[in-house]
Image 1 (cartoon, helix red, strand yellow):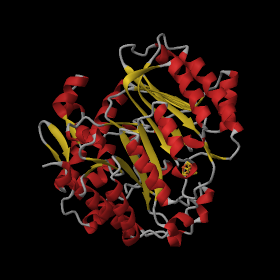
Image 2 (cartoon, rainbow, N blue to C red; image 1 turned 135 degrees about the vertical axis):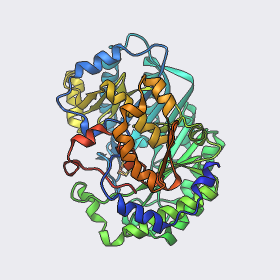
Image 3 (spheres, helix red, strand yellow; image 1 turned 120 degrees about the vertical axis):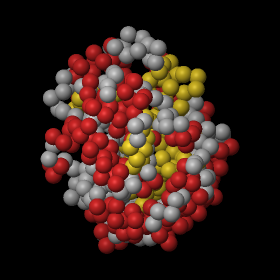
Amino acid sequence: MNHTERNANSITSSMVESLIEKYNSPVPRYTSYPTAVEFSGSFNPDDYFSALSKMDSNSTSGLYVHIPFCENRCFYCGCNVIISRRKDMIDVLLNDLFEEIRFKSSFIPFKPQISQLHFGGGTPNFLRISDWEKLMGFLRDHFIFANNIELSVELDPMVMDENYLTSLRHLGFNRVSFGIQDVNEKTQKAINRIQNIGHIERLMDVSRQLNFSSVNVDFIYGLPYQSVQSFQANIDWIKKYKPDRMAMFSYAHIPWIKKHQANMPAESMPDASEKLKIYLAAESQLNAAGYASIGLDHFALESDPMSQALKNRSLHRNFMGYTTLSDLDQLAFGPSAISYVQGVYVQNHVKLRVYERSVREKKDFFEKGIQLLPEDHIRNYIIQSIMNNLYLDINECEEKWKINFKEKFANEIQSLQDFQDNHLLNISRDAVEIMPQGRYIVRHIAKIFDEYRKKTAESTVRFSKGI
Ligand code: SF4
């Protein structure tokens, strides 16, 4: 059975609704394990610098650069951004980025080879083309770009034109991702993100002409004035323009934390039941149109390497998103950027001023971090296998970590029994396999292997709900 068939199974919204009602507790997204709430401010920065010095010169690494600026505030935004149109702020940021990269790279005893380079934000296309030339030149001087490097950037289509896209292609970019969110004007006005859809369509066409190997888009469900009916316009648009990959994120309304979200009245948003129906209607149509579901919030054409990786059960995830590349060290630069090197996670300071000071004074670089324990590595492997590939090969796990899985995880296997009894997963001698309905609560299944959640009272930790 292929993924399309599996996902197109006749799962009704009432079946999923009752599942979500049953498993109605906040759970981590597991973009990392241990999750970011375990990162600590008392982390010793020398552990990270020591990890840099132990990087493997035979492996490639991922590189991430964070650009924190945006020209306009979208009301749904959950990121830490600086709203500005002052382009001179980029000159300051680039100088700080260069300082940071020079200093931290000095701990690596060789020039790292990079197989994945991603720019996120904020709005990376806040940069002018002359800034990109400077930045890419600097990165090429300090890192070796692998021949088959994935060079990707998140773009706000409304603050760029076709020439900008052409210049990015000439600079070596081969993947682009456009933030669209919703093609309906009423929703766009409510979220303060007015888009000219004709302009986006031209950018999509030009991206294809320029031979970007992957052209991706982002949508969000749960926004004001969305309904199953209104969201159909987004699905029709996707079917027409056939992006290679797409993200369909669930909007979380938390105006008590993100004050600007209060600009959107809660009454204008679809209720939980409608929101679920939007998601399920979109998912079944996308599956039927040749997209595989990647986790709950991503889709990729069946021909895309990401869908192939899911089929081969070799999909991975890091802070940049799903990836077909396995367990790379991730060097991340810029405010709030999260690095992962040789079992150590660190997050740079989130506030721009604090980040700038840390770079200029070359001390107190990190907001927080954590060094993984041997046990964390094993549990991370299990949780990522379940979350990304919906499958844990017990024999491979035993072989890799030199453990007897059934003895070591006897309690966890006991806890999985309830899911098995409800046909949400199947445990055999060789594997734990998540069933089609179990996908919707896969975070709850993965949580069984999360040692930290057992220790921490859930009420003290803020996580989102499944869908
Ligand atoms: S473009 Fe993205 S990061 Fe910037 S305000 Fe809008 S949602 Fe936030």
